[in-house]
Every structure is written in C-alpha cells, then in structure tokens.
Amino acid sequence: MIYLQVFWVFFITNILGYGGGPSTIPLFQAEVVEHYKWLTLKEFGDVLAIANALPGPIATKMSSYIGYQVAGPLGSILALIATVLPTAVAMVFLFKFVTLFKSSPYVKELTKSVQPVVAVLLLVLAYQFLVAAWESSGWIHTAILALGSFWAMERIKVHPALVIGGSLVYGAVFLS
Image (cartoon, rainbow, N blue to C red; front, side, top):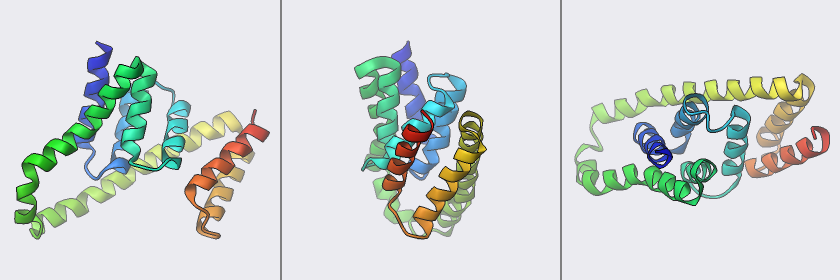
C-alpha cells in the first residue's frame, strides 16, 4: 500500500504543479509533511536545502529522496517515475498543440494568472520554515542566518549553494 501512496503523491503533485519545481514544492510539503506525516517540517526543509544545492531538477531530487526515506529503493524509483511521468506523457501527446496555441492570448493570460498563486504558496512555505527555525534555533541565530544569507546572495552575489553550505557549517558549529 505504501508504494501506491508514494506513487500517487508524486504523480498528483506533479500533475497539479504547473510551472515545474518551484510550484511543486508547496504541494510536496502539503502531502509529505501535513497529510501523510512522512517527514517533519524541519526534515522537509533539510531535504529542500540539499536538493537546491545539488545540480538538476529539484522535483526529481526531492521525490527520489523522500520516496527512499518512506519506502526504500523501490519507493525511490516509483517516486521518480511518478515525478517524470506526467511531463513525459504531456510532451508526447500534447506537443502538437504547443505550436497551435503558443501565441494564444488565453494561454498567455492563464500562465500569467498562475504565477501569483505559486508565489503565494512559496511565501507561505517560507513563513512556515521561518517559524520552525525561530522555534528550534532562537531568534538570534535565525536572524543571523536570514540576514547573512540575504546579504551574501543579494549584495556580494554568492551562489545559493555556497550560502546553503555556509549555513550548514554555521549550524554545525553554533547549533549542535
């Protein structure tokens, strides 16, 4: 039964996650953390941080890892297949319609209307991570990490993977 659940979670989230990885992250979190309780919010945040630091699509990395944690190697394979399958099927069967409707004003407006929804979902997820960090690490460490990360990425243009790595080192030194 767990294999069916793993497949279904990642299949549905990737069908509904219009726009790729960033739009699927809040959906993954809702299913994995809140509905099935396979991971805690902190564990999910750790998986998200590691998946962001590694190269490649974030949805495939997250689903593979979560599938492995929940159901072992077969769960990882099923989660990966469920993540890639909706896009592969859509590409094969719907590709001929892309050229037909790519300049349609309705399609352009639909795409524009989805972007704010994804932004709000990511903002809610970021707020939940902030509250969890605040509760577990305290406001001083949370503020240092948040402001330091913002400064490093925005002011001196450090790559996000290096900021994540630096945050991990900070946590190992000061929070363990």
